[in-house]
Image (cartoon, rainbow, N blue to C red; front, side, top):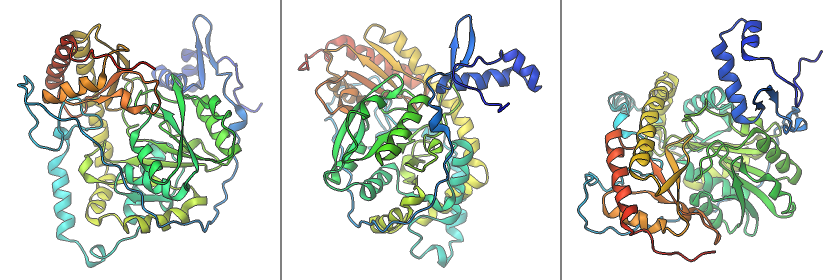
Length: 475
């Protein structure tokens, strides 16, 4: 007996399995729910739980990864496109205006709970390392990052995100956008085709466009990027694919296990690289955090990108990527050419913050904070915006994706929100083609429950007022 479950095989009941294993039934229930959510299991009402028949077994075979060296390097730097902002009008607002010009406003996407950050602890760590800063830490640093921080990040990723990596593969950069620019510099030459999700993250487009690459948008559905469409492209010139599998930006769904395995098989077959942007996977509200796509890539075809901007604070400017062994030399050479190295002081502080367990405790506490804020936003939308917009996805992350009626100008809604001291992201701005869905991305991380409730009331007033009903060209 090989003790392996096969596609379509029925699993024992949670009660029976708990009794066999001698564990709590709750433990088994949580495991089943996670596997159901990831697509490994199928639940059939009245019949039981079964192993998913869509799981491609061939992709699960472990193939050893042989580290390879490459002489492909580049010293060309990518520049991040400056984002444009809507102009503000002097309109009296019931919502207090922002206290600074940094954009700490209700509904801002990707803004964490700065009011809940452990300022005192962080200040103590910063002071400690600043006072004892040695000459070794005051000279030019390692382009890949401080060794202790790289080791701490690798440990965290292995245990919390199921990423396959060693400290040597971790490269510290100044945020996820820098990691995207670095990936583009290493992987792409002018004319190379790169697959992107449609809709998708504009910052990734900026990085790839700066390299002269051709963007190939692929539609997403409730299971993530439509891998079946990739086979219609052919292998010629498809150098990479950029995906957000744990929390698709902007629509919010998670890529199913079957889709992930199919995507990895496609990358291996075509010789393409996968760029996985895991920008805010720490926070899920319908299941436990999903493992990374990179951890399933037994042949090492994925570059993994993460950031501390969403879990700590954006001004920290520390992100990272995990380079495959075959590309490590190229990434290190490009990293040094990019901006030499990341400032050392905050690397020292962050390394201790992770190693001493402060980061793990902060994540646990913030999950409760964000769960309350998410519920406050959803309650406010139900109370003040019923019939005016619909919630598309609120499963994870720090924003809720909502949809508006087809002929509602979501860009005009954002302009009206800005005039009243709020902000949001228009869903239509995340599309490249003419077929655009109208909606709003509403961040909830940076505002407390009371503020979110008031902000939803203002949003409801704006949608009711008709300011947003200017017809847009239909595709």
